[in-house]
Amino acid sequence: MNLLELNGVHVVHRIRSRRLFGHDNVYALTDANLTLNTGETVGVVGESGCGKSTLAKVIVGLQKPTQGTVEFRGKHIGMIFQDPSTALNRRLPVTKIIRDPLDVHQEGTPAERADRVRELMSLVGLPTSVADAVPAQLSGGQRQRVAIARALALRPALLVADEPTSALDVSVRAQILNLLADLREKLGLAMVFISHDIQTVKKMSDRIVTMYLGRIVEQAPAEAVPQATHHPYMRALFSATPSLLHTVEPIVLSGPVPSATNPPSGCNFRTRCWKATDECAAALPALVTAGADHTYRCIHPEL
Ligand SMILES: Nc1ncnc2c1ncn2[C@@H]1O[C@H](COP(=O)(O)OP(=O)(O)OP(=O)(O)O)[C@@H](O)[C@H]1O
View 1: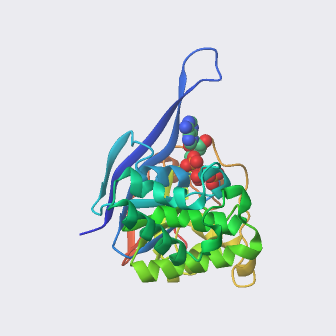
View 2: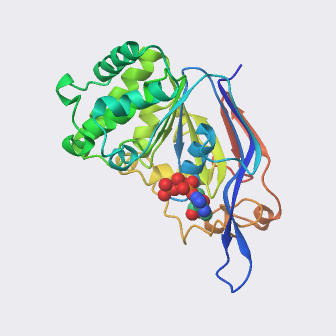
C-alpha cells in the first residue's frame, strides 16, 4: 500500500479576465498522478509557475483539487515553506512555535508537551539558549530549524518541503539539507522535496518528477537523471545546470513559457520543443513506461 496516492488531480483557478467581462481559467495542475511509499523521497523540479507549489498544497490539504483524489494513509503530514521569516509567528518564542501543533491536537499532558519540545529542539540542532527567543533574534538557518521542529512535532510520516533552502544564505543551505537527510533516516520519513536547484533535488531524492505548465511530463529514478531520461524538457532542464554543463550538451529553449490560462493543445511543451511535429499538437501523448518507477509522455523521446 502506498503512503500517498494522487489520482487524476486537477487544480483550476478562476480569475477575473483582462477583458472587460468574464473569467479565465488558470490550469495550475492538470491530471497529476503520483504515488509515494513509506520512507521514499520524491523530488519535484520545473520552471517557476509550473505547478510545484500547487502540488505541495494539494498534498498537505491547503488546496482543494478541482477534480481527482488525494489519499494519505498516514496520520500527519508536516510542511516546511520557503521562507521561515514569514512562515513563523513573529511574536512567539521558539518553544511556543514548536509547541503549537501539540497544543492544537492536545497531545499528552502539558509536561509531556514541554518534554517533546525540548526533544524536538535537540533533534533539529537548536541550542536550549534560544528557547525564549523570537524569530527576529535568530539566524535564517535557526529559523528554518524551528520550522522543521514544528513540522515534526506530531510525528508525521510525510514531510513536504517547498523550496526549503532557497531563502537561506548559501553558507547554511548545506547544513539544512544535511539535517533534512539525517532526520529522514532517523525518523523513516517520506518526503516531497521541491526545489529549483536540480542538483540538490538529485542528491536528496529517490525519484524525480518533472513538471511543465501544470503537467507531470516525466517521473524517473534519481540515478537515471539526466542521462537516461526521455522527455526533451527534462533533458533541457538538466542541461542548463551549471555543474552538469561539461557532461551534457546544453539545450537552449526558445521562447517564453506559454500562459497557464491558455496552454497549448496536445503536448503542452511542443511550442518550445526542438523536436515538435504536427502530431504533437493533435493529442496528449500516451504515458510510456520506460522501466521501474520511470514514465514519460512524449512521442519523440530522447533515447
Ligand atoms: N490562487 C491562485 N489564483 C490564480 N492563479 C494561481 C493561484 N495560485 C497559483 N496560480 C497559478 O498557477 C500556476 C502554478 O503556480 P505554482 O505556484 O504552483 O507554481 P510553482 O511551480 O510553484 O512556481 P514557483 O517556483 O514560482 O513557486 C501559475 O501559473 C500561477 O500563476
